[in-house]
Amino acid sequence: MSISVRRLHPTQPAYSLTADVQNFLQCGLQYRYARTSRLPWSDSPQLWFGRFVCDCLQVAEQQVRHGLQPQPPWDPDRISQLCSMVTTRLQAEQIVCRSRSRQQAGLQCVTVAINELGPLLFPLIDAAQVPVSGSRWFPTIASTAATEDHQPSHFVLTGTVPALLRVTAMDRTAAACPLRQELLSHRIELAEGQTILVDFKSAHRPDLHRGSRRAATAGSDADQWRALVLSWLLAQQTALPAAAVVVYLHELSPSAAALRRLRQAQQVRTAHVLLPHPDSPDAALLHEFRDGHKPPQLSRNFRLQRAFRVIPVTPAALQTALQTADHAAQRIQTCRNQEAHSGRILSAWERNSHSPAACNACRARTWCPDFRGR
Ligand code: SF4
Image 1 (cartoon, helix red, strand yellow):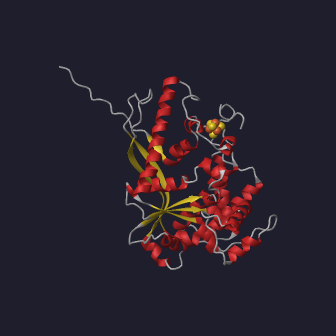
Image 2: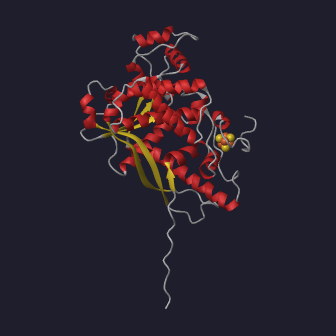
Image 3: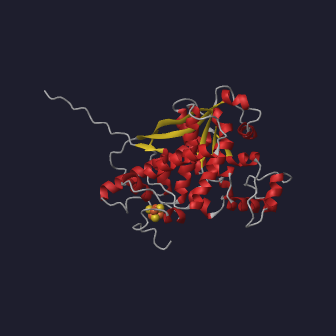
């Protein structure tokens, strides 16, 4: 008597939205070295700034939620202690900043984020750092040598929702809440029990870069795409959020360069840039701002208005965002198969970075064929 042997089920590959899909979309080869070979991502000050600001805000929120610290505003000593702790953590991951001016800008950004955004947002946060996941089918693509393998039919996509706001909590401060006003300006009326997904970015609002070479290469809608995919992942566990909000933390303490770009946009009334009302004191301050002078202090309301970017979560937008994620996962799988077949890394992985800044900071640039001549 022969006993049949149960067939082995192929294991589903799992991709992290940030660590896999997003990084692959920036450059496949850089992703391969950093993720699989554990080569450090880059040594750019931008990487340090982004991690430092977002991690400080996250730790501050955690400490307030667990009753270890009072609600902000905090005094400089308290903020300095928090910054030292986060700096030590980042050093352990080999993420260091050697630029003193960048460190100063980071401290300034963290101080304003905790003291101006914290009192507004911390009481509204219902949950933070929520792990989410969902299963997706690989999209059908034309047959290639790689796809003729026994590929899994679907994959698991994972992510982390930085913060989730619930409407019942928002109602307490609804009248004065600039975030609520921003949602209403997008005609998003919140019903009882609905949630708002919040994602934090340490950068300026991307409208200042739209149309520039940097935006074209970095993908100016990457933030919108990420927020939408996180919304879908959240919906696999609870309910779809009423909206997603990306918070651009650098808008709370804008750099002199960003203010110059804002002034320029105001002079020519650039349509896609969020500008102050022409008759407002903020417009007058920008108009009077001269190169080499101290940057003007714009009003808190206008800075918050620029910091909050509301992204409506609609079925059409979700579908487009998910298609991008599915195709990126398929491309990662294809590159992996090609490497397994050929035993070569350079020819197997896509070198899809179009950003000279990203290439300059890339650890693989010394042997990457595409770096030459840049
Ligand atoms: S140098 Fe540029 S193209 Fe080459 S791996 Fe790095 S980011 Fe990618």
